[in-house]
Amino acid sequence: MIKVGIVGSSGSIGQQALDVIRRNSDRFKVSFLAVNSSVDILIEQGKEFNPDVLVATDSSVKADGVLSGENALVETIEQSDADIFLVSAVGAAGILPALTACKSGKRLALANKESIVAAGRLILETAKKHGTEIIPVDSEHSAIYQCLNGNAVKDIDKVVLTASGGPFRNTPSDALDHVQLDEALKHPNWSMGSKITIDSATMMNKGLELIEARYLFDVLPDMLDAVIHPQSIVHSYVSYKDGSTISQMGYPDMRTPISLALGLPDRLECGVRRLDLTEIGTLTFYKPDFEKYGCLRIAMEVLKKDLNGPMIIMNAANEIAVDTFLSGSCAFLQIADIIEETLSELKVDCAVSLEEILKLDNEARKAAKSVADRMIK
Ligand code: MG
Image 1 (cartoon, protein in one colour):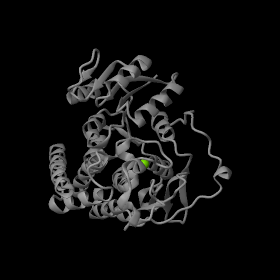
Image 2: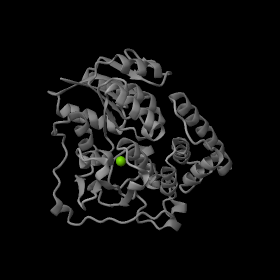
Image 3: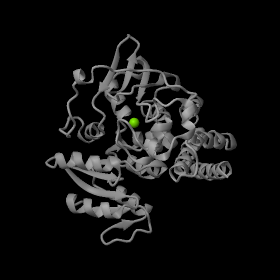
């Protein structure tokens, strides 16, 4: 049996991973489950999957048979006999568990893009040092992983990430002023948590993913690009110097990348429909409008600088800005304004150690909060 530990089991990725495990119960056993604070879901999942340990990282959680606090999670990962760690916590909260899992020498199925954006070099170097294999769970990066298929980075011409364009892809820029929270939360193709759904609406999600790809695959910023592909069938593609382009396709269902990360080298039955291209008929692609998607423009500028300081600041400011929008306190277009203003106020080029990274992340959150407070007054 392959033992799997899941960080973020109550979230969208965590629940879909448990569905993949449920469908392949002869192959997988759950060794631990961890949530932030959704302890009721955790306990229900515990009854079904019978893991050795249940953890809630929120230290205020008190429940029988559930360990609580961030240290409890780190210790659980350190002591776990899991063969695969799936880290799908949301936001910078994924940094510490991802980094701890990198020291295991096993497999890290990584669904937390913010940890790579903020601490990409540190995570990749730690994994390499300990012989830990990182398999990306983000659909685009799972696609790129498959398109690379052992080809050398020196032979790549371009790595192109596809984006659905989110719920506002047909909304003219000048109408974005008035969009409401419920409209931003309606993603046309993917079913996901609220933070990533807003990130898709602003296209910051694609910006974070470009930075994620820069580290995961060690490709330079000018080799990376994003195109809008409304059908979300081509999940990304890699063009090589010989004129060959390889793409990975499928219906938009996160169980495909999850089952690849859990099942490699095998391909698992995971409940996803087989792709019928005649049913789709037409696939379309076009360039994103940077005027309309200010967050993507900011992220591309940060990517081109290729310094992790601005990446950390942008990521933290985005989390604050999205929270502010989700709480109904700022307008949709102010998300980009908050990020841009925070980047102009806080100038740090690099953060190397975990302590420096977490310190800068914290400073950036504070700066973004005061920017947001000023802006919404
Ligand atoms: Mg993605």
